[in-house]
Length: 125
Image (cartoon, rainbow, N blue to C red):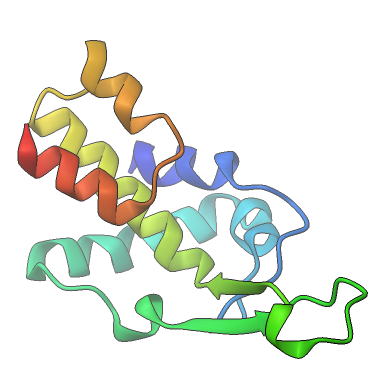
């Protein structure tokens, strides 16, 4: 339960909501009730070794940068805030269980790499 209480505090304010329309502000300001509900939800999926399908979906948005050439516009992927939180908790558990939480391995995990890279790194070590 402690990890579910701590995880929302590390989310950033002002980020757009993803596919599930849940913003990081909702998770962060929800308090103990939100943490309790998230804990029950995450625990259910952790025990069943599953991830909710909606947490894997993303909304793709074109970012306008002043250019009239549509093919040059940058893309942004808006992921589920709850899915990101669940992923963060899983990564922390994997790091703890595989003793990656120290030394070089910890530095590699904290370099801002994507989730896929982090899982590969955990599997590799």
